[in-house]
Length: 165
Ligand code: FES
Image (cartoon, rainbow, N blue to C red; front, top):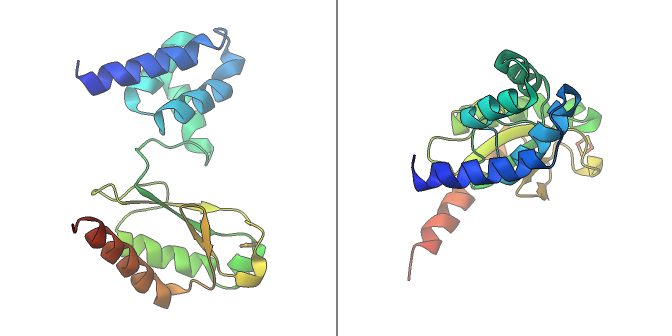
């Protein structure tokens, strides 16, 4: 077991101890574990299933049904495409498609280099700026597919700048 695995195991056990071993606690347990670990690794799913005496397949069923749960680690930057009504009407799905193609991931996944993870959100309350993409909790206005490359480039340049003395 690696040091990282031990760290995950400790956080997991701390989260589990807060709940009684009842099946009805499955969603709150998943939320608590994800809050501690940032996502739900396979080992956590196995441990939760054992703790609550629920088949692992049922735990996966819940995790994949609800949008809030992640099976992969989050990226350094969280990209969230708003698909609320106003953003949808202004082409939110086309923007999502552009992000998916540019990042090379589907929604709910992180890029292999761990820089970005992509997901969708419901209305974030700034519909006049539709279509909106939120990056690290900062809403960006009128993000249509033509703006995706420029936004990504600005993050790439910022990262390169961080590496300079
Ligand atoms: S629908 Fe996207 S901000 Fe309201």
